[in-house]
Length: 143
Image (cartoon, rainbow, N blue to C red):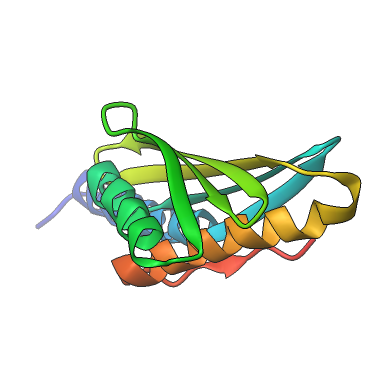
């Protein structure tokens, strides 16, 4: 006959498995939201993706090189940094590793007073295209 200790141990293990999978699922849900912010004369957009950093970076490069409206002006593959122009907008994009299969894209762009929304739209569009190339569904966080 099993003792109450065995039942307690099984219950603790079961709860640990359930709660760790729920926490993990919540993080992924949060991670795929594109956040955009305006700060003075700079626009910034970020997203955290559950994908390897090098895959995300090369999806960024592929997105920028295959679309004729973008022109890469500076690129550093080692730092996973790229600067590009879209019309009159100059945009910087950085892909950082947060964990072995977790990456963050940060896009920033200076803007003139009359072009505030345009630079944010470009940043979000590039991030959306990268997400599509990676097969990851991303949504823009509406404030």
